[in-house]
Image (cartoon, rainbow, N blue to C red; front, side, top):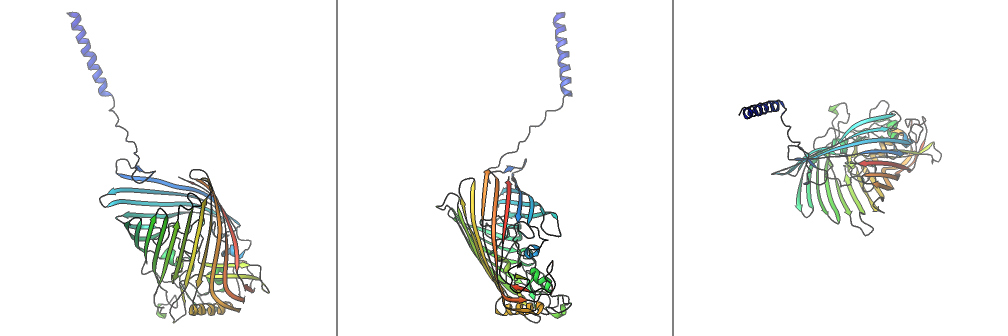
Length: 498
């Protein structure tokens, strides 16, 4: 009995001691909540832990170099030091870029709520003589989509899905719209079924459509007079044209509409835009001098994309054609410049030759109204896949700018007053471009590309100028002969997308 009693007492004591030790142990950790794949919106989406929102992170890293470019990589040598062909221009321009984008989507009773953000970090060296190297942060896209509405910075509803790159990698193929880095807007898109959709939008005109360089309207009065603010020959031979930009502040956003059909065979799209043209005062520093009445310009676009071609799997043809009256940036547009000035050494009886072109919405003279400028352009590409790793594109574009009879006469009279000389013709000009790109993708999402593009400016003046000063390194009092000019531009790029 004593043995059994002792055994029970010992067991009880041991149990109590074990219980006491267990009470001192930390509480058991909660189970880890692993990130779950979201298959509702395609590959790459995950659920944000603890929510019903799906998120996808993406972007690319890019390194590239351009040859015989101006201003930035892959821009043809059609103005600035590169257009002058002097020793201040950089024949090679390097750029490195990191892109990061964030895509979130949440299913609601009103449909999917989507946000999208795309930002780039860029370092460019050799872009200009005054800047050896430069880094910049850019926001391409930042928008919210809800119940068919889009609010924020996105591709214009006017643009095609390929923007300015139907088969090329550069951003300077003219002949149509290019808002590949986004434009602020409020838009609504309706889906009608069977791949048919329609969109309407109000879009900010101050970035892409109006104040790029000298885009806007010119006052051609008083050119060449000493001390005037309108113009000097320096600004003209740098590509600005006679007169200065007398653009006023924005009042009404551009009004844009689009109908698109997306199906297995490809795409068809028509777009239209209304663009308000506003000039400041006849004397830009004195409001009592009055101003020309506001006018409305417009642009229309038709686009076609063909897929599943008999030439091979993945081949495509992309085409778009645009016409504009008083809304020139829809043709000579988007991320490219709108003023051109190229020099050459093929002059007869003059120091050098030159071709100029200014794409503005309109011109006027003091006391008169705005004479709108018209333009049209066509561009396209054939994209062929040789193998899953190798592909080649052949692309081209043609653009034409017409100042009209009255506007052209105003421009030419102002030009002759500003620089003198013995020349005839009109300020109308055309730009033709053709090029090819070849890409190699040795592994998924890693692509090496090489591109070359030929650009020709066909201008309509004949004769010589008596320019006082062409600016930059050009000699004082030299004579220049008007002649068409051309240039070649090349680019190499490596890009890793994730």
